[in-house]
Image: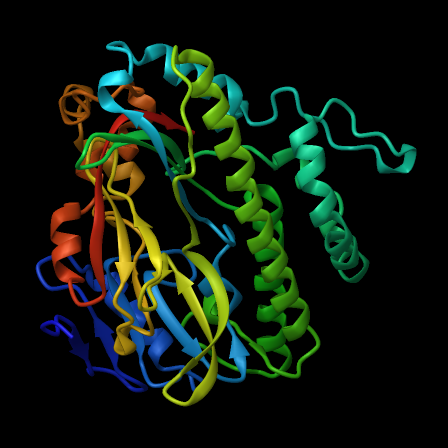
Length: 412
């Protein structure tokens, strides 16, 4: 294994925190969140912090939390299964049109995004057996998800009347995006970032509330109420894991539906026929997984972290206008086979809107066909850590396979 780059935090009760943060900002508020997590009695070995680590709601983004006998719903969060998908195509840079505005517009029409996510979508009227005007690809994808969702609704009826099938195949808002990228050899890639949408949010919010009630019932005092957990053997432990697994499937399929639409949208604007999926990666970075580490079967919660077992392919995106990376895991045991999920924020959305001017955003995204208006200032490159520093800090976690640069970016 290459040179070890992690640092150890031991200035607290509980297990250590190992952080791969050399050379990147690491805010004190995030450190304290990690200390709180490390003080829980069911953490296995230590907590790992990735180089994109920053303060999050419920638990630290960029954290890897291995547990035995309990799970923390807020450590997974409400965008369950959020992750990345990328495909390499047979297209080359010189085959793309000089003006990429039409390609961006075609993608925006093909994939509902941002506040347009409900355009043309209605919830299915299941009592009449009708699907409204939902597209065929969405109906087909939902049919594989529906049986387990119905079982979840039998246990937790409030999940039933939520945005589920109506959000399938939609991008959402915030830091979710679709990009056309070029790699180091000028091959064209399509890449997107999204998760389980409204239904994942409802599942996460519901079980976070149930975990808090469990803590009240057992009179367990925590340093942060968002660290409320479900002990193994309790009423909702198994139900939560089943719900999380379903939401992770929804998120993965959601990305697949959108990617197929992106491929079709670009194909409609190209005078040449091309192949896609010559290389494909589809990975979560907000999820729970049953794994074995240090001779123990554990639940690994990755909140803003990607699994990086030896040989695993993953995606580490930069911000708008910054480079992104297709990586291969090195199987680092001490990180619980994990790596960062992106660059990580250094400014809150509110702070970015106050400190970054529109001219600065336009300059930072020069050469990228994307939104250059005040509505995306909170996603501008300056709001994130420098991706090259993030990659340098985790050189013993992953190796770079491809380096991508955006030429088109669609934001929610």
